[in-house]
Amino acid sequence: MKILVPVKRVVDHKVNVRVRADGSGVETGNVKMSMNPFDEIAVEEAVRMREAGTCDELVVVSIGPKQAEDTLRTALALGADKAILIESDERVEPLAVAKLLKELAAREAPDLVLLGKQAIDDDAAQTGPMLSALLDWPISSFAAKIEAKDDALEVIEEADNGREVVTLPLPAIVTVDLQLNQPRNVSLPSVIKAKQKPLERLAAADFGVDLAPRLEILATRAPDPRPEGKRVGSVDELLAALRSHAGLLEGEAR
Amino acid sequence: MSVLVLGHHNGSALSPATASVVAAARKIGADIDVLLVGHNLTSIASEAAQLAGARKVLLAESADLAEARATDISDIMFAIADPYSTFLSAANALGKSAMPRLAAKLDVQQITEITAILGPDTFERPIYAGNAIETVKTGQIRNVITVRTTSFEAAAKGGEAVIEHLSPLPSTGAVKLLRTERDESDRPKLDEARIVVSGGVSLGSAAEFERLVYPLADKLSAAVGASRAAVDEGFVPNECQVGQTGKVVAPELYIACGISGAIQHVAGMRGAKVIVAINSDPEAPIVKLADYALVADLFEAVPELTEKL
Ligand SMILES: Cc1cc2nc3c(=O)[nH]c(=O)nc-3n(C[C@H](O)[C@H](O)[C@H](O)COP(=O)(O)OP(=O)(O)OC[C@H]3O[C@@H](n4cnc5c(N)ncnc54)[C@H](O)[C@@H]3O)c2cc1C
Ligand SMILES: Nc1ncnc2c1ncn2[C@@H]1O[C@H](COP(=O)(O)O)[C@@H](O)[C@H]1O
Image 1 (cartoon, chains in turn brown, blue):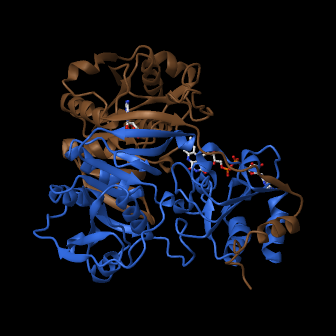
Image 2: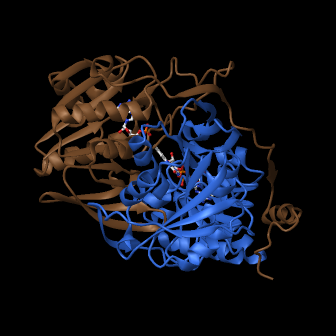
């Protein structure tokens, strides 16, 4: 099967993001950028399927500025065969991302599109389900395990209350959760090899998709600060402090 | 502006999240209808009909729909979408997979996990794991919105909504449920509990979690939570995970035992009224965040606390 994995370039998950003083957004200048962690897991899963022989071609795609090429090179180093950059310097909302991916799916004809369950910058968690609606393909969300079975997939999903095991026919969309796998480290030889792999550049504007944002971001602020905390020196002191809040320990055994 | 709310239930009872979504709906528009999808919904429907502010409870009820997937639910919502301008759901796993599908079918850019409603078209929502709060304004005529339920008081009882059966029902789609692995414990649910006791990877094993965290939780009638690292190690099931990619909780009291307080964890518990940290490292971020921080070895402090309660 052919797998398409969309990967987003985001502020690295270890960075402590700061809101700009003028409220115009978060500081992204001079900040380490990386592949969205969930997308790394999606790439890893596809690479494992490639290694196991269930996948015969793995294409990665990123929508973003020119620098997203770095993210794509990382995916190539992880084991992807081919990368596509759909270049845009503007903010592209999940609906527009899904529309671009729909066009790309028509061209690349993947059997499976594996996406992260959410991007850790906008925390939108929309693109996978949106793409499934636009393509009219079935979707399994929050995959913790994926097994290929002939023309179908069996997926263990993280649900609201426990896990659910589902089956869905290909072509399909799956969004991945952290539990799915532990991505490998990129080795130096594979980074060098990745430089030889094909990376195609397309312009988002050429897709005939309406890219104009539908939502206006009026302001961005830091979260409300929590009140100053207190250090307690012992379990007794902690208990006294908690009991000073009327009713707080209501569940406490009498 | 009429609003369609996706009602959540577990097959036997209405989920409390639904009441919070209805409360949020009342801040956006009037004429609020609640959709329930499933099988044998009679008692769940009468619960929903009592939510203050609900006009109608719409039932999509059939044996097939007992195991309705998110895809089926978004298809049903789309089929009845015409009269509505706003579509709301809790931002739980079901809402997160069904609502964006509906949004895409309606050609609407969804607004995810709002935490405040500043006006009928203006909302606040966390981004970057809650490290920033964005104010968004929609210019769309129709909107699809998911709600962080802990940010909204539940709608009161006392409503008298009309219960209506939908027909014809669409057939269910291509995704089939094979089996479920449910958490059958009778402990309070993480997203409903007044008190949450959470453990981190430093507990070292499922057995130590069982020995230390559960007794403290049971004494407080609390739900058990965990960090991602503890879940990854298999100490507790995944549904115990609190954080950016787990559950968002806002209990009266949150006790974090041996959890460092990584931003992704804090994203899920920052809204607790009182935060207690028990951690051996005075520099751990959770110690700085907590209302009461006890710098101590959890293997001593937790049993002592349990005993003295
Ligand atoms: C995309 C992404 C999403 C994530 N989502 C989540 C999420 O939803 N939820 C989540 O929790 N994490 C999430 N994480 C992981 C997160 O970054 C942290 O790795 C994780 O929360 C750490 O778990 P921990 O606090 O148990 O472990 P550690 O960070 O290793 O902390 C262990 C703590 O225990 C303390 N300790 C050790 N021994 C003792 C002792 N004897 N007594 C008392 N204290 C002791 C240490 O001082 C330390 O503070 C995510 C990460 C990524 C990249
Ligand atoms: N700009 C983008 N480029 C490539 N993939 C993306 C982009 N935005 C979102 N995605 C994919 O969609 C998933 C969910 O993103 P989101 O809906 O923004 O939370 C991500 O994990 C990626 O797999």
